Picture 1 (cartoon, rainbow, N blue to C red):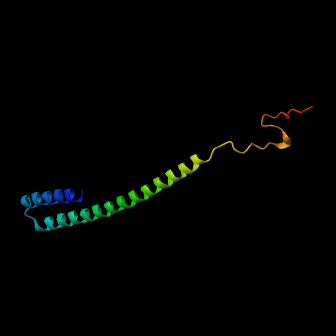
Picture 2: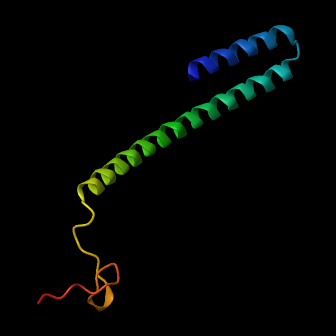
Picture 3: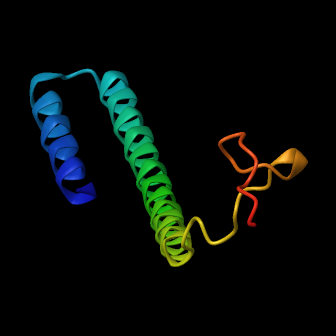
Length: 95
């Protein structure tokens, strides 16, 4: 990607140089190309760092999903005040 952008920048610069006899304008344009190339390099580094962070977070999510899937809900009964069942009724008495 960087090579493609740099190639386009150089081609554009050559076209500008061919049509522009002003050396100061050429120097300004070269500086702009260099600044943009540096910015592209910086942004590519940020993309790489964010990609690594995203991958690490995705692994953590998968780990937590696996851990959560291993737990079966409903193993512990719900506690209710007063010894009643979850429906609010007292358990039947045996004779």
